[in-house]
Amino acid sequence: MTIRAMTLADYDAVIAMMRATPGITVRDADSREATQAYLARNPGCSFVAEINDQVVGCIMAGHDGRRGYLQHLIVLPAHRRMGIATGLVQASLARLAQDGVHKFHVDVVIGNDTAARYWESLGWQCRNDIQRYSFAVAGNVNA
Image 1 (cartoon, rainbow, N blue to C red):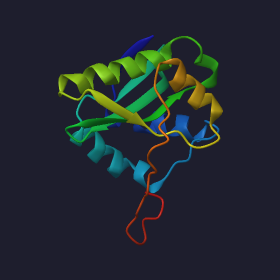
Image 2 (cartoon, rainbow, N blue to C red):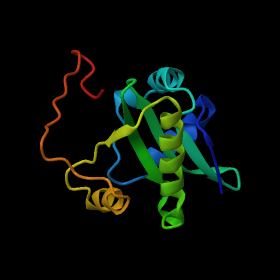
Image 3 (cartoon, rainbow, N blue to C red):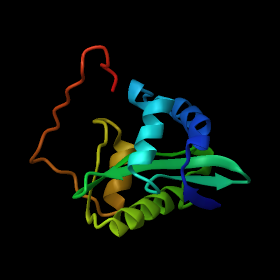
């Protein structure tokens, strides 16, 4: 297995993996253009895992200068329980730390118990002191 920085050339493989993963929703914010802008704004923070030149996992990550945000941690079901997700998380956290970011957040959809157990197994804590509110510009409701 190889973990390397994600590039726009990985877009089709990552989107196909997202579409094939139950519980993952592909939104307008996952367009090629939006992904290109995200990768440019957060260079080297997102990663893919490959086995035999096939993308089998990905994580997208970025920061606002103070806090890091992890998104789209996905490993194809046939390749789970092999340390791929943890390797992707570690790669992103290490890269974010290089930018001086030392606190990180991840959103887990309510009801995704598998994801919740995974993050808790890594020592992440579920916060119950905040609520996230979202706002989308009209016409971009899936952002």
